[in-house]
Length: 51
Image (cartoon, rainbow, N blue to C red; front, side):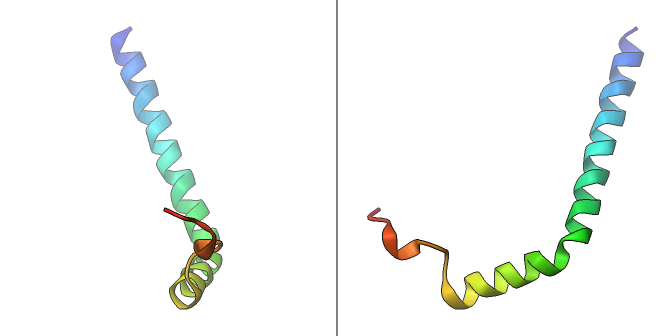
């Protein structure tokens, strides 16, 4: 029974990594644009914090 649990865990982690890879690929344009905006303009609300 321990083997089945280990297999389930391995498959779960494999599916999560694939979902993350697909999401990142699908949203690569937005991520690049956001990173460029942060690089040129700074973080949103950056001026509003006092720490």
